[in-house]
Amino acid sequence: MTITAPLTEDRILGGQLTLTQTADGYRAGLDAILLAAAVRLKPGARAAEFGCGPGAALLSVAHAHTNAQLTGVELDPVAADLARRNAAANGLDNRVAIVEADALSWRPEAPLDAVFFNPPYFDDPDTLRAPKPGKQAAWISAAPLSDWIAAGLKRLKSGGALVFIHRADRLGEALIALQGKASVTILPVHPRAGAPAKRILGEARAGGRAPLGLLAPLVLHEDDSGAWTRQADAVLRGAARLDLTG
Image (cartoon, rainbow, N blue to C red; front, side, top):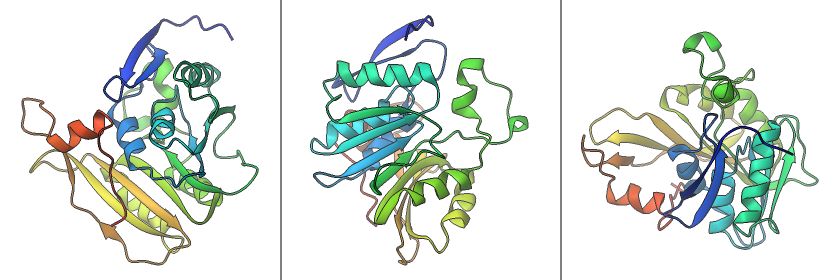
C-alpha cells in the first residue's frame, strides 16, 4: 500500500534493528523494548504479538530468538504495512509474518507457546485528554484489559506464556482477570529508586497454580539527570534480557 504520512527511520536495540514508523502517529518506545526483553522462547517456539504496530517489540523478540516463528497481529493497515516492511528491512521476514486483523478475535492455526502485548493503556476516553488521531488506537481501546488477557490465554498451549506490560495502577485489574487461570509473576518498573512504579511487566503461565510472584523492581534511571541505570541501559541496547521466572 502507499503510505502518505511522514515517516522516520529509527534505530533500536543499540542500533541493531532499523524501524520505520510514522512521524506523527504512534511511535514505539521504551515499553516495547521492555516487553520484548521479558519474552523468553525456546528454539522452534511459535509466538504472537497482539497489536504489533510497526513491529518494535515483535522484531526485537525475533532478533533475540533466532529459531522462533513470530506472528504480528495488527488491525491498522498502515501499521501492519510498516511492520511487514520493517521485518523485510531487518532480514526477519522469513520468520515473522504480519496478519491484518483484530487481535482479540484472531485465531492461530494451532495453540501458541507465547502471546505478548503492550495494549492501549486506557479503555475510557474520558480518563485523559484526547490524543492526536494517529495515536488514538494505540492509547485507547474499546476493549477492557480483561478482554486482552482472556484472548491471549485462549491462544496458548497449556503452560504457554502470556507476557504483557501495562500501567502500574492497572495491576489489580490484571490480577483479577488472571485469577485461577495462570501462574503470575510481576516485575515492577520504577523510573528511579524510591519513586513509585509507573509500569508493570507480567508473565502468566496458562493453567499454572503457583503463588503470585513479585520480583525485585527494575529501576530505569540513576537519578533526576535521566541517566539510565546499568541494567536498564543493557536491556535497551539488547545486551541483557529480563527474567520473569520468579
